[in-house]
Length: 343
Ligand SMILES: Nc1ncnc2c1ncn2[C@@H]1O[C@H](COP(=O)(O)OP(=O)(O)OP(=O)(O)O)[C@@H](O)[C@H]1O
Image 1 (cartoon, rainbow, N blue to C red):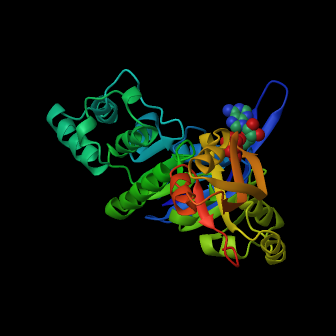
Image 2 (tube, rainbow, N blue to C red; image 1 turned 120 degrees about the horizontal axis):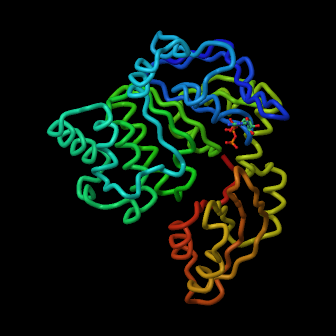
């Protein structure tokens, strides 16, 4: 379906050159959900943009559906782009157009008759669960709803490939889960090949079939999600996976922590906006629970903060409810009780 053959991309500036993609060879089968991971600057976005020729390769071939796209004429390229939908972290909706207008846009460009546009847009809005929002403007929608609109727009011309550039990175955990479910449904219903880049390992874990790891413009490792996670071969892959998971405690450390803290231990994973809110102290006060932070880390990845804390909860008085506290926290952060081993 998509094949990169020894593809390189060099950006040439006035003073210096940047080799963003270096001799990449990869094959992505039709109907696969394929993830690309790697640290910032590894070349992921550039590789993605080569698939619809938003960037042209400096050398090598990009074959899509059996066609070498670098050899296409402008008209053929426009046709190719109709077969490839793309969604972004920032949604990239037209703010001055309604939801209907946004989804209809690519069909208008393709010269589709009005009645067909109406039927197709209504079908797509039903598919993404936004049939009642056709007349709304993007600013009236939540992040998750905006991403649904951009997905409907990307699907308008019935593409066989959907490219997702950090599509869930601006969303909270629950909305991320819903969008991932939708992507899975699209993949199954239409047999669309999905190529995505993300720095969120749980995205890879929950929907991808295979994954490639990039470093310095090269694909250093590639394989099934299970193999890459369970037994990374390259030290850089292991390093990347550890750094973004950042939450595996060694059994020895866990044992030490549990021996020092008799109360219930919970792991809280904060991401995005939740890292700057006093969610923990507020909820603990409300439910009369004392907490102490046992272990934790905060890291920055692609400009976003990710925090992982292990906290001990103890009732402050007879009105305390740890269960209610946990239920409240679970609305904004991931919460799980720390048991004997961590998976
Ligand atoms: N248009 C451009 N002009 C010059 N250099 C560029 C351009 N686009 C990307 N680069 C450079 O190419 C390299 C790879 O960038 P790319 O955005 O593909 O990486 P990435 O893995 O997607 O990173 P991130 O996760 O931060 O988006 C970087 O060194 C970047 O600065």
